[in-house]
Length: 314
Image (tube, rainbow, N blue to C red; front, side, top):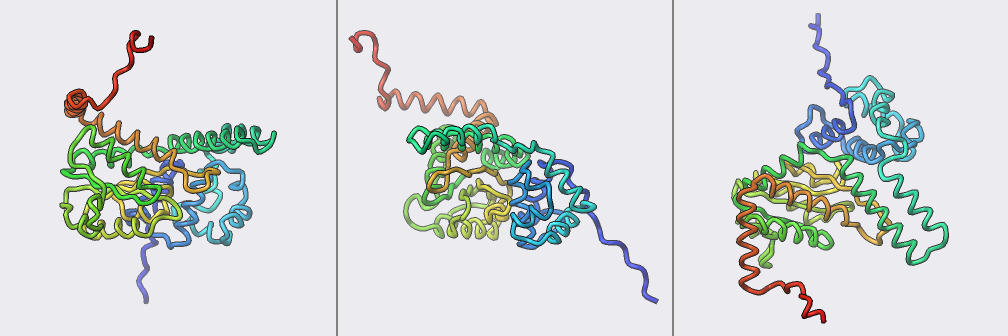
């Protein structure tokens, strides 16, 4: 007689969108209590981008939107610990059906009704960026953010990696962190190659990678290699399904959906500003001293022009 087997282990289902998003990140990093296939992980990531969207009201409509079968969503719900799709759906609908940033989107559409003028196009793009910043704040994962800050402020050396548009994001973060600490650089800043740059990193150093869909293959591969080497890694990216998330120890997620002709980095710059400020606040005394030394050197070298006085303006 075959002995009875224990029932499969179950996970406690997330009760909020924040908890669900944190679980998705943990699954991508290989640290979650469950394992999902590639199709299920991508479906979960896209669903999380829809927080409060009316398409979530119907499993059939949602499945069509995601180009999957309704049964895929049911299996996904069960894998995440829910009794079925309705319980999963209830958490997804916990956000307002208007969706994050709907106020700005509606104003942008209104601005475009009068015609595609220069002002209307500028208004739309500005409102979309405001909506992305709002989404970043609404989905803010304090635990992941604090983990990233802790790694950065304690690392002997911090290295940033981003190419093309995200080279600007990486450079901005380097500039900001250098204001408050030393030994922060861009990967391959000297042009000797990424392999040499990774080789020079020690086990306590931190690599920060940044990219968004469709993702830079080079950045994703470097991040994955860094993880295999045991280096500490932080990702600044867009979705839980991003390849940078799986390679990271902490992931900061930023929305970027706009009518800009390429990937928008407006909200990414705001997220980086938040990260720089958080690192500064984590070490207030050393930050104040670093800024004092910086101001003194700027004054000594005469780098900045002083504001004109009354005599100069006469």
